[in-house]
Structure formats: C-alpha cells, structure tokens
Length: 290
Image (cartoon, rainbow, N blue to C red; front, top):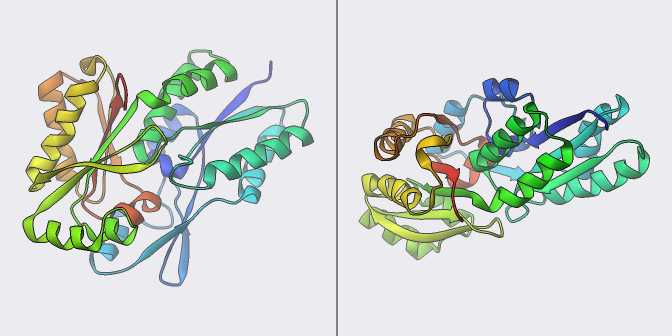
C-alpha cells in the first residue's frame, strides 16, 4: 500500500497554521479584482483578507473562476512521481466546476500512473465547512487510516457537515442571483438578514430571515441546537468576512450554550467572499443531518 497525500483547494479557507498542523496540501484558487488576478494561498501571500474586504466595501468588484484540468494535473503529478497516492477533497460540485476538473484530472493521471491512485471526493461543502471535513479526514490519516478508509469516511459523513451562515450586505447575494433585486432592496430597508445553508446537493439556499444583525447571528446557533451531534465534544469552525467581532460573538454563544471547548475562527477567503461579501458569518459543525 502506497503512502498518500491529503489534498484540497483553497475554498476550504484553512489557515496556514492549520494546513501545517494537518499536513495537507492546498491548491490555491484564483480571484480577480480590477485587471489583476490573484491566487488565494492559505498564507494570504498575494492579498491580505482585510485588504480584500476593505476594497469590497469601497466598491471594488471581485470575480472568480473554476480550476481547470491542467491546474489539477500539474499540482498532483509531483506526488505521483514520488510514488505517493492522492486523496482529493474538492470544493462542492453544487457551487463550482472545480470538482469536475479534479475528477477528469484523476482519471487521466490514474491511466498515466497505473501504480498510483488519485481518488476524488466531492465534499458538497464550502468555506470552513469543507475545511472542517478536511480537518476530520486529516485526523483520521494521522491516526493511521488508509486512503480508502479516510475517503469512505468523508463520503459517508459529508452530509453531516452542517453549514449555516448570514450576510450583512445583500448586494452580493443579489449580484450572484441568490436573491431577487426587490428582496435585496426591501431587506436592506427593513434590516432583514437572510439565514442560509448549503443543502445535500451542495447548493447555497435561503431557509429563513431574521430582523437585525444580532438576531441573524443568534439564528445560526439556534440551528446548531437543532441538529448538532454532541456539540460540547466536537470542534466547531466559524468563518467571517472581515467581521471578527461578530464571529467571536457566535463563538462565545456556542461555548456558553453547548459547552464546546474548541472553536476555530478564520476568514471567509476571497474565492467564497467574492460572492458572499463583507460581513458574512458562517458556522460549521457535525450534525445528524444538514
């Protein structure tokens, strides 16, 4: 049995510290602002997230594009050439074509390197939801589980990875077609905030609203109360779009209500943040269902 590498992409929004602790490899996705394209590295070497959200707040536009097959082939080949297999935990196929590119690259590489294997799992996750699934997979790998044992666990448990989030500025959801222009205008006037999640097909859907920022943040934790499995004894991830204080409020609420000991906070990276905007707060945990 070959040694293997756990591989994901930067839409998982893992910090550089976590990437190093977990021993995972990350393919940086790209985003464009103005006439310049940046790669979203975990260490934010090409753009600091605070700068990214400052520019969005000042009216800059950001766009993203999916990884192509060649990007994945180039990234995975060096591991195969050293005799290692690769397990890829990819960005949700419900939100991007990135996973499909990974699958095509895997098929080609498996033919080119018949002694090695590339296996792709469509996580149906995004942001630190994907990151949390990678975290659990990495812990299993560190415990000595094989590529297939980890891959099978990810397939069997990915629909237990709950994503709940809210946004501050409805303009970005309107631009992405997630809400109608009329809903965006009315919601802004009345300070109505959407509460959304990622469904079993990996799509982003609206499931409710809350009046005001405080109520929308509380709603995230209320949803956690409904489905979380043993919330006091699991690791919970929270991501934010340049609004650390709000993320910390959610973390404090989670700890106070459930006795959760470990909560990890990081930015919503530019690849996701281009579509959700500044002021996004997202809560991720394992539950009985999404």
